[in-house]
Amino acid sequence: MGKARNERRYISEIQTEAPRQFQTRLQERVYEALAKLQIPFERVDTEEAITMEDCTAIEEKLNMRMVKTLFLCNRQQTSFYLLITVGSKPFRAKAFGSALGVARVSFAPAEQMEAMLGTTIGAATVFSSLWDNENKVQVVFDQDVLAEEGYGCSDGTTTGYMKVRTEDIYRKFLPFARHPAAVIKMQEV
Image (cartoon, rainbow, N blue to C red; front, side):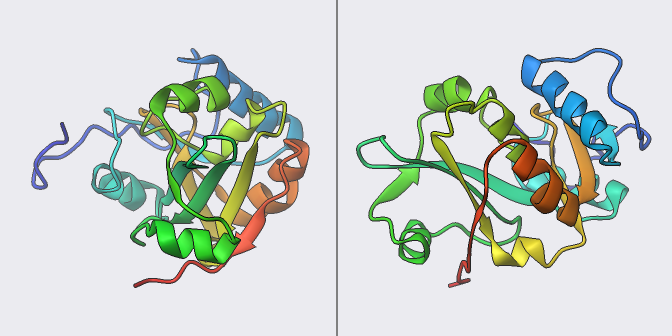
């Protein structure tokens, strides 16, 4: 359960190096990839942050807007999508389906997220594409995210958040992870 709005959440000082100890194998892969690609980042350690509301203080600390990353699937659970949109934009399944030409999408089950993306609810991140070696998950960007200079996201945990350049995610990281992204316009309704 999140803290009340007026309570301050623990957020470390800004760091530019990987954590000394990794919580998960995905988190370790994230920092290995960033080092290999020479992608600079700023990061903070926090109390558990799962909702977009939990991330408000993190956004302030890192001076960026956090993206919202959703793991979705079709009704048959045969097609999977990692949607990355602006944090403040509400998700509308029908609008997403229309923009991508897919009928009836919903949130994928938590156990699928863990198996396919190596992470849990609240920690979905574009970096999860490192876990998807078989390319079963299509990365989908809302074009509004690409207009942002800074890209704020989880490092694969619910207690580590970072800011990188959006350009570095889209032009360097996704090709490295072999996950070209579809770009759509998500309507705010």
